[in-house]
Length: 126
Image 1 (cartoon, one colour):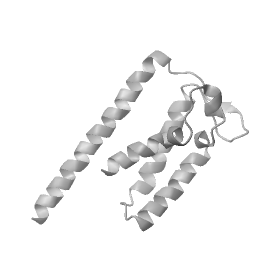
Image 2 (cartoon, rainbow, N blue to C red; image 1 turned 30 degrees about the vertical axis):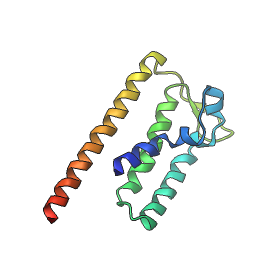
Image 3 (tube, rainbow, N blue to C red; image 1 turned 90 degrees about the horizontal axis):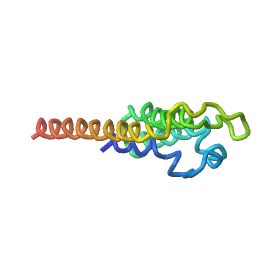
Image 4 (cartoon, helix red, strand yellow; image 1 turned 60 degrees about the vertical axis):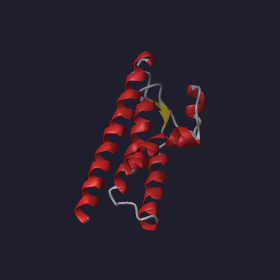
């Protein structure tokens, strides 16, 4: 289940500010360097108050940062709201679907691995 949390964290820049054009991505606060910092703050609160495992202090901001990196190489982002656009279109639009499939597959594999560990842990206690 927690791997799904990380997967959803990677989507949060688009969930909070969906962009259908590059200009809307460039103007989205959720696509700046502040997004991983906010993700870190939220994951600290989740660990403290929701008792989520501490490893998520690392993985949730990494998921958000990975999202921003992929957006940077697929059209660019602004690191700061009024800053320059960094990155460009290094990944052709026709190949983007392969990246989507890869990351979704990685999420499914990780989720299945987490489920197997949970089942083994439950069996150990019974």
